[in-house]
Image (cartoon, rainbow over all chains, first blue to last red; front, side, top):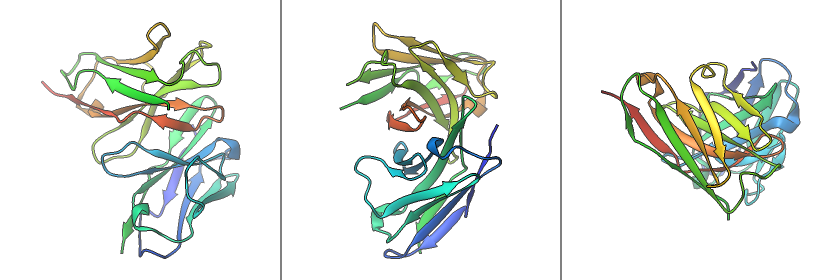
Length: 108
Length: 119
């Protein structure tokens, strides 16, 4: 089973700043099967990025994803107030889905 | 617009069986392009995948829950279900149903159903 480790656990930034979130896998992941989600309190997760770098419908272009092998990154180029939330990466391989433990992006 | 809605008891006694249903509108669960899954989130914690099932008959489970979880699809009602046996307090969580696309990303989610395991 592939384990995803996200860092940092908490990221404190101000609106307008750039956020870089990391997701590291315990073994290589096919980028086609790597996704990122945003979750706000009391809401279900929302798909942001799929196949490592493709934005889901309606997702602003300030969100971008990249990576390959074991290292993947979600970048928010310029933080808006509504971007402060918890972010999860997720992968699928060998018929199993796994999630990272999440990064909380909080207002500084 | 695709919508998923979980339903089921909010309180289950320890050692009993948790049963949830996800009703889908705006798409058919018999579509060969997708699978349908369950994810849970204990209070204040992260996401845990439970399992996925497709109309083709493929069903996959989280190894840690495989012995207790059963997923099924009912195409006549366009809904799918989760049964989790022998529950304990550790199974207390918000349970989400979701659609999984061709690259296994989860693109549509239900609003979630809180299930508490307590006597």
